[in-house]
Amino acid sequence: MKQKTSLILVSVILVFALFVNINLASAEFWACFGQGEQVNFCNPSIPDRTCGTTLCKYCMKTFNDGNQCYSSGNFNICNTLGGECGVFGGGSLDAEPPILTLNSPVENEIYKERKVLVDFEINEKATVYFTNLEDKNNHWVKICDKCLDYFRERSFDEGLNNLTFRVVDVVGNENNFNLSFFVDSKDPRILKTDPRNGFASGSFNVQFKEENPKDLTLNYGNNISGYLSKELNLETECNEYRGKVTCNTDVNLENYDGEEIEYQFVLTDIAGNTDDSKNRKLDVDTTFPVINNLNYTIDRTRVNFAINVTELNFDKIEYIDNSDLRPRWKTMCSRLKGEICEKRIFLKTGAHDLDIQVIDDAGNGISQNVNLIII
Image 1 (spheres, one colour):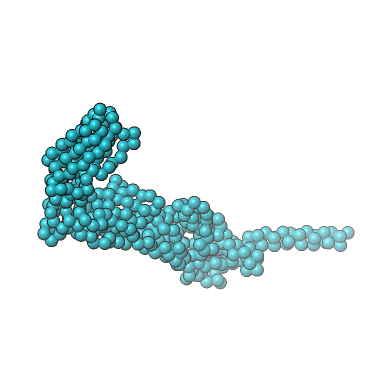
Image 2 (cartoon, rainbow, N blue to C red):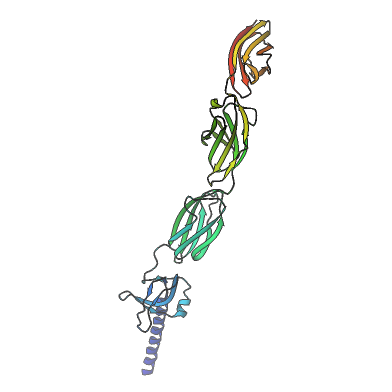
């Protein structure tokens, strides 16, 4: 009977010992400390330490909250737990999200290359992802896994890059950081300008290719009357079509009338890249033609016109019959005899509403209306 009782007592002790070992095993944890943090041990025979690197990790068994000290654990047991930090310096569980310090790219910066340096630091080990909200796919890209810093160039899209960085530490705490910047690696390109030759009356046109234009300036003038500049309004004076932008602007050239000027467009993008158009030289004519007399006679369906005009740089006289089903401009005279344009035109029976205009080489024009009836 005593032998049986002894066997039962031994069995209970073994079970209790096993239970205690299980509890002791479950108490082990990895304690992590940042650089400069003090590691205090409860056992006076174990000297205290100061973490001298970015992250120090120790196997611990218990933390004495009253004395703020640790008891060393069994490394064999800790190694079965994996490498995750269960407790951080001070004995507190890690409930704080990681903090990312982003050195590059810089908020609202404009970069001239598609490859941009990504440089950041994290206050604890974390996995970092990013997504570009301007991207239609908007997928997450992993930058680094359980890292403390990152310093590497990455390629980004042209134009606006609106990024969100997601930082997740080893215990699952998460933090998001937003950043926007521009990439403009392509130089602006002026495709053509008008007028190309001949005369200038003050109207100028330019066509260019640039996704991020900032300034468009027209420079014009000469050494006689001086040089002037006009900055175009990209919103009101320009229109984009199929990747090409066309702009139209007008300047007052009265001070240059009868002189020769030169003009040039200068285009600048948001990155500071520029392109200059070809320097063109034109004669200036801001004086409008003058219709001195406009006479006509009607002979059945024939109308004989005799128009006296004063214009040094005459181009043409044309007319349009607004009474036609499909009105269109027709040339009456492309040259003058002296200052006279003589032309016979044929009109159908009925009332006719004619607009007659005189145009010079610079595009200046003056018009006069004529109403007549063919019987």
